[in-house]
Length: 230
Image 1 (cartoon, one colour):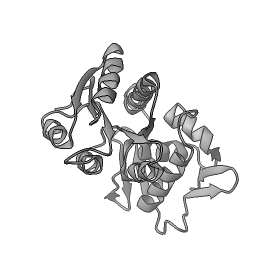
Image 2 (cartoon, rainbow, N blue to C red):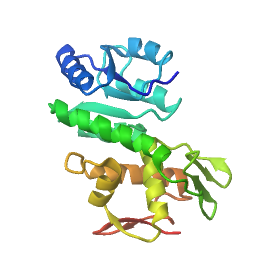
Image 3 (cartoon, one colour):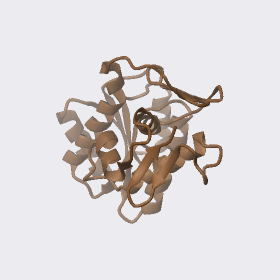
Image 4 (cartoon, helix red, strand yellow):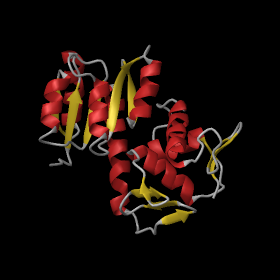
């Protein structure tokens, strides 16, 4: 079962979890707090929330395992909580399928804004006009079913990977800077490391390109940004 207004906060620091849950509840969300990964996984088997706020460094079952578990079962959005010194962990988390991250210490208001932005993006396709599937060579993307196939085989994409690919395919050959892509797809470019776009482009190349080191579709325009070449 999926709850459209439920947020899971999985954080082992009680003070951080308390502040995060307080601000989320003030903003109208239902919040469940878990201080260890094992109990969170048990709860996830019964209820899939609208979004998960996840600390990577957890006792018992850590955030990495929870991320893998979630991605194997769907595309529920994940916002990671990481320490400032854990840059490599942030990159690895994004590569595993997390949608966003917030660096500790952080502003609770900023985190709530991130939550709203992610939920707005993931639900926006229901409100948009019906768009036809896009097909370029063996690659097909259907915005209604959110299904991407390559040579007839389904390609598993995270929410953010799908949105990035869909956006670029809708504007073939048009070059977008990383800041433009952050603003269009993440909505909060001032808060997010531009390297987030690079990570998602690399993940997409690994999934849709014949040779990710020599891409044919997702091209880098050096010194500018990225484009989709049909």
